[in-house]
Length: 247
Image: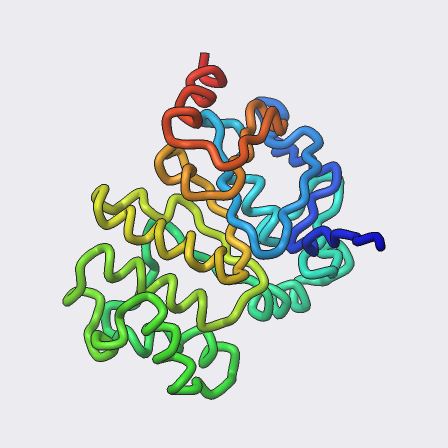
């Protein structure tokens, strides 16, 4: 009797991505041929020295920017085949975003901040689904509070609940703990880790080795190229690798 193993599906595929920014002072090659697969249900941290291209990589992976050459596929759909309107609809349907700045509206309650993207898309927010998203981040009892009445960590968890409410194929996080103290940051990272453990795909850009240690895989960039990967590395190992890249 033979058994076969099935590789996890690809949530995001980058195929030969380049990105060149043109200016009067000359061209800048932010990415120089990046090929990588982000498997579904995994947590990947993207790291690299300043100017390595990690933020550009995330923006292109999420369809927020177009590559100069190469292709991006998300949930089996090639982004290059989509016009601006269809790309926007795909992002709403398959992606969510968490940033260092929480991007919450102070005048709205936690409940309404979570429901806002659905309402902006012209759909009615399902109260039970919004409360479920808040419950998943431990804020079910704070649904009526507004951002100024919450701590930074609570605001970031509202932002994560907002992302989860859309039930995305991929959650992109850009320095999600950068504005938080260490203890609160660990709470947010533990939450992101739990999301991946339950099948959510998470792609996180970070400069913090401790944050990266929560990921399944750390993808290292330097000078616009993928220069290495590390699976299940601890913070000390990741920091040592970053020190090598920054020399």
